[in-house]
Length: 245
Image 1: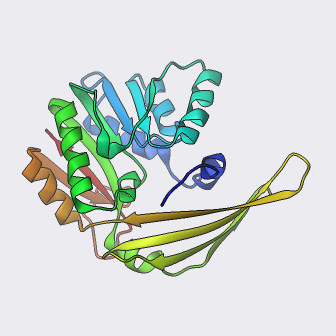
Image 2 (image 1 turned 180 degrees about the vertical axis):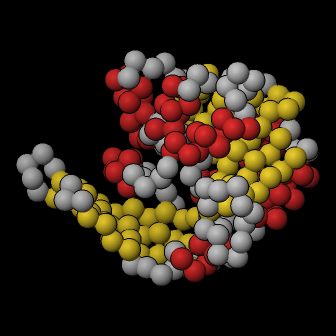
């Protein structure tokens, strides 16, 4: 289970390889701010992507289950003189939003929702929150990444300020993985403090997500892979899904 209590402190350093600008451009291409101004960032984390959408002119709000993540996001926004509403809420219990133009669930956040019915409920709640013609953008780990790439652990990282050893183990359910991470974070006195995190992720076939979205009522569903406009392949690692209500 993901706690995020300490993970929030090192999250940004570990996400430096994520091309957030490309995520922004993906959404802007199909939902330009002039036509789709109101955007909800679901699983907004420390607010990096929300800040980019704000700078692009969208009216952004963010929700995340982790109050620690939201505290870092709030500090980031305050330092940048941004006013972006933040709400502590799990995506499975999303409520209180109506007539959204755009909803995003970025950087495999929905893969932390492990139960099939909970994924469907999340997608249904987002559908209910969108205006007619509104769009949902999200990405998930592929079956290949979950079943093969992730299981080729251990993985290591060291930038002198933060180091980790990351072990993985196949989960109990199909296409699921336990992540066991041991971090060593440098403190003010130069010493390193150790803490451990255990996370669990599960994914489903792209066609399964597509079927759920269509059953809920989305009129269009588009699948691409790996930050491109190409259709998913057997060895694609990240699947991008855009659904139009």
